[in-house]
Image (cartoon, rainbow, N blue to C red; front, top):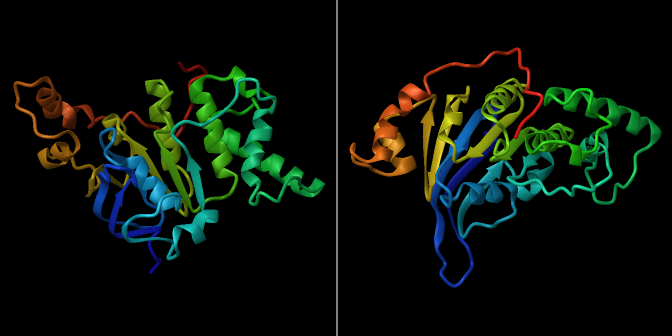
Length: 273
């Protein structure tokens, strides 16, 4: 049996400031290889903190994290990461092809490619741009793109390293609704050997074809498949009376998310806000 992509046991993390507020408490979470998982939760619930612990950027006060059976710091080469806000400069002169090819740099000491390596990486970068719906824009400059298109470039760059684990933090915050649904369907179509985890506070993404949904709100509760039970929603949003607008919304969530607007023939919109 394959070892899990991620195995977390008893994880607790508090930011080392004066208040020492516990952000994550006694988390236990196992992600099998090839899974496509959504991590939902309110702002401030600890979703991004959890990702940073998995990446080895933060060290928990207690508990253990294993990524493919190793410490996060020993598994970083297997991980592709798409941050919540990709830092880019409007006047940055590189083309999309150049930016995506940066994903092939595996060491800070590697500053150039041989001619053969560059030809290989150019071909691979073109294919990555095609996968995210930016075919034909290889020579375009980043500042000419919409926010959603820029985010797709960052995803393409992450795919250049052939990751076994792909972590995405609020990847569709700049996408319009149709682009958002197409993007999550694209992620579902990635090779089976890639484990994909998407973090979001937007419950509408739960309509996408995830294999499971985890809710992080200081603790973590995992739901196999699509579980929109009252307990699931209460963990995500808290308990609300039916006369409260939030309570009315929660009552309608199962119907809202029951539709299947996806097709494997994905066409990304040309423009996004």
